[in-house]
Length: 228
Image 1 (cartoon, rainbow, N blue to C red):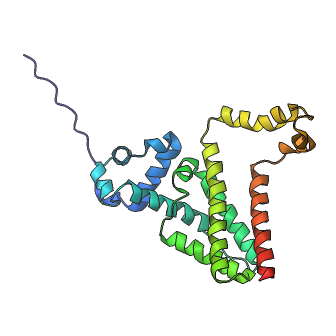
Image 2: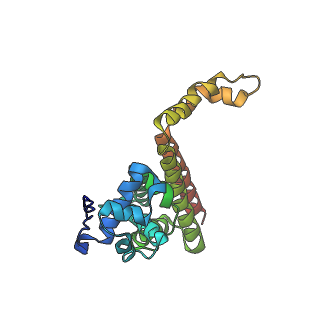
Image 3: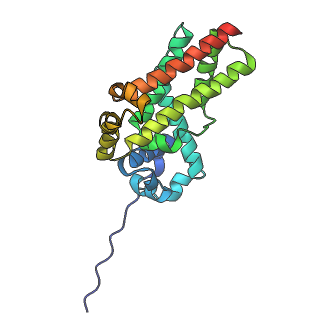
């Protein structure tokens, strides 16, 4: 009777390389490759060549990992950032950086960008934004309210855009074409307001939408500061 061949032993890597940063790199790469639903500790362990319990030594649970990824996105946004002497330019530059980070990691951003990380990058960002609003002339409760609203607006738009980027390219193309086809084909007698601007709707791309929303918000800050 022939003996069965021994089963190959799967070798695990030494755990000396495993750090929170390495785990977050793997988590973000996995989500961008296969979608956020692929993110589990067992899958991370497989990706890193370790038992999933080794990952749990650095993050007590999935929510801890998600909060760390939230702060990681914010840290990427802040990397190399230098505040301007002009408060409006500071807020504009920072909002654009947040958007770029979310666009660079759309699956990750769609999952975590709405969270409050309570991490170092979030605190650093809050200090920059609040400092700019105080420089603009807002104070106390009004500065705090505008800070929360501005951050949520920038993150909400960036997350919305990130979710759209996770769609198949064909679906995104159809959504874009709707502005120059279906909207322009609507009967003017039934939709007179749409007809009045229909030729321009397709021109308002994602870049234009973000910049317009940001400018409207900063204009409101300027008006409130002047009023107070």
